[in-house]
Amino acid sequence: MDINKELLQEARKCVKCGSCLSVCPVYKELCEESYSPRGRAALAEELGQERQDLTSKLIEIFTKCIGCASCEAVCTKDVPITKIVYEIRELLYEKKHFDIALHTVAKLMYKSPYIFTLILKNAALLEPLLFEEIKGLDLLKPRRSLPFLSKSRFLPKVKSKFFLDHDFGEPTTSKRHISLFTGCVFNFIQPSIAHDSLSILKRIGKDVNVCSEQMCCCLPALGIGDMHGLKKVVMKNIQVLDGARPEKIVVLCSSCSLMLKKYYPMIFEDESSRVREKVMKFADKVVDYAAYLREHPDELDSTYKLQEKQTVTYHTPCHLSKGLNKSDVIKDIFTGKRNLEIVELEEPEACCGFGGIFNYKFSELSLKILDRKVNDIIGSDAKTVLTSCSGCIMQIREGLLRRDTDVEVLHISEFIMRNKR
Ligand code: SF4
Ligand code: SF4
Image (cartoon, rainbow, N blue to C red; front, side, top):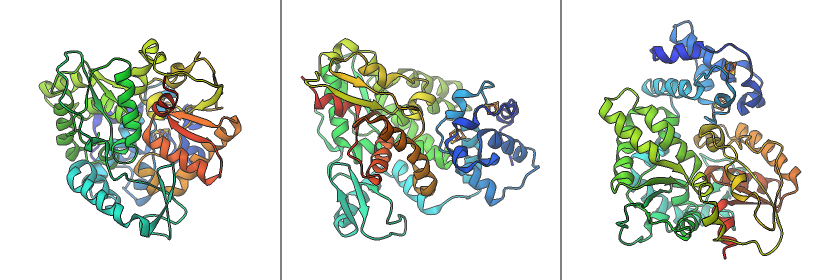
């Protein structure tokens, strides 16, 4: 298999120490060496040396990775496991080894947003026939098993009015404005969280532009290996978000943040220096929303006040903690707030098992990983979980619903706005 030679050199840096085994959520469930991070590094090398055929088992091994980056956070040899996995997925994509249904949905999402949104809005008309709505949780329960979804799973509810349908008025002309990137889930499924977040940015004194032409961050495209198809969309996002020369590009969802900040430059590594420079300049301006709030403690403090004592816990999304190396952001934002007690989970950074397409393709495995997270939350006795990633919110809400608890999962913006001054 024609794997990038430099990447194979990186894979060879693995000294088989095993430090990554205890943090890989997939390995912890499957307990099979080939599904571990070091197993994937070794198999990539075997494939590169043509000592292994591309069997269906190997395809599954490279598809069954959440992309959580937990392995990279502990690896002392800096083996870029996720980069290796994405490289192999690109090769699998070129050889047409993919799940047609899931790939079609993902491609519609990032390549044909107008058709995708049209389908979503029309599909909403069929919703009452096929699903029962779980009020207040943005989740739908299938009335019967569907070709793409078992009766035991839940599906996120798509809203009739998207966040980006809103009229945001004339763009600001302020030189120090910020540009807001929402991401698909906050746009289609959780627009109220996007509105809350926009309000908070304004309340802390920021001039914000929201450009309705922004597209999917393209993390699903990276996940399926469509490296070629995503480049045009990425360039469009760069043009739309950076066109008015904002001071910062603030990204609402942690997974989108990782994509814009870290993976955009990675995707264009082999392009001309002019293109690379443009992408790097863009990525330098990108900042995760939660990390941005942490940078403005006094302004944020003046926007909300807890009238009564509340106890919360928090879940740090993998892409924020391990991907962007910002582990304590959520905790830092709320530490020391009057009337707020924060109880720690045993493993606040442990993966919730979402992983976008992974969650639907490997539903059973995803639920097992989720179970560990839910056990940790229930064991903490907190009644509120705060987090900042759209995917984690949907996943953990489903996990808690399956266990019939009254614990709620809130985005940090929902919590702040609920207690606004
Ligand atoms: S932690 Fe790094 S070096 Fe150690 S086994 Fe895992 S991938 Fe290899
Ligand atoms: S990215 Fe996550 S799921 Fe994939 S190998 Fe690393 S720890 Fe395991």
